[in-house]
Length: 296
Image (cartoon, rainbow, N blue to C red; front, side, top):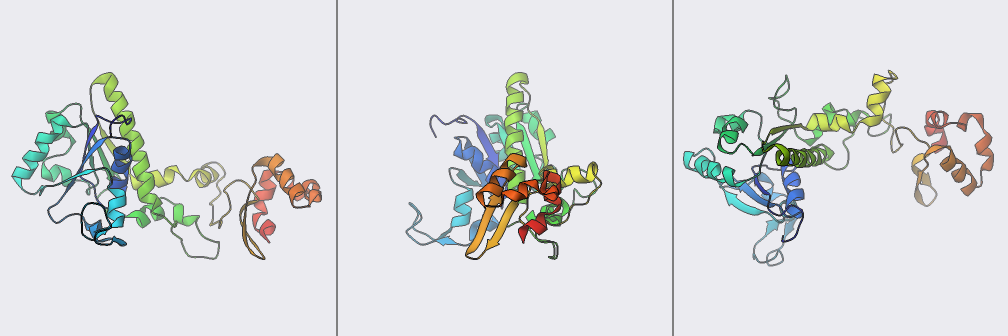
C-alpha cells in the first residue's frame, strides 16, 4: 500500500453483499486502510460460488468464495457482534482513529445500535459517514428493502432495457449496486476534500434508486422536455443511429456512429453513398426514428 494515493485514510467498513464492499474495495485498491467488520458468523456472500479450491487461494489452505475475495481484496478483516455493548464500545474506540464509516444497513439500524452519525460525530467531528440504501434514509420508501433488481426497476432502467416485445429486462450486471458504489466513492472523496478545508465531517446519503435515475440521461430529458415515454430499445443508443448490434450472416457486427459526419463515413464504408442523400436519413433525429428499419 505504500505510496498509493489514499494511503493514510482509514475506513471502517460495516457493509455487506455488493454496493458497500465494492465501494470500499475502490478505496482499498488505492491504498486506504479498510477494516472490514463482519458479524461472528461472517457475511452472507462468503458462500457465493465459484469457490477457490483448497490450497489454491493464497496462504490459507481452505476453500473460499472467489466472489467474496474479489470484492474484499486489500482489506483487513475483524469480527464484531454489534448487538453486544462491548463490541459497540470497541467500534466507538476505532472512530477517533478513522476517517470514514461506510454502512449499508436498512435505515434506522445504525441508530438502534447507538452508532448513527449524531453519535459518531460527538466522538469524532471529522468523521465522514456514508450510508447506502435502496431508497435513502428518509421518505415514503426509505424503510423498504431493496436489492439490485429493485433499484433497476424503480429507477427506470428496466423500462428501457430489452426489446419492445420483451418483458422488463434487468441489465446483465448488478448496475444498481455498482453504480451506487461508484457514486458513494465519489461523494466520500468530495466530503474528505471538504473536511480538509473546514475540519468538519458529514453524513452522506446514497440511494440506489436515485443513482439509477441519474444515469437515465436519454429517458429523463425525453420525458421532462419532450413528454416522450421511452420504450425498450434493444441494443440501440438513446440518441444516435446506426448504433447497435446488427445481425450478419456470420454473427453480429457492432456499429457506432455519432453525428452526420460519422454517418457519411459509414455509408461510404459499406458501399452505400446514396444513403447520404436520402431525406429520411438527413439528420440524426430522422435516423433515430428509423432505427428499427435500419437494423433490417
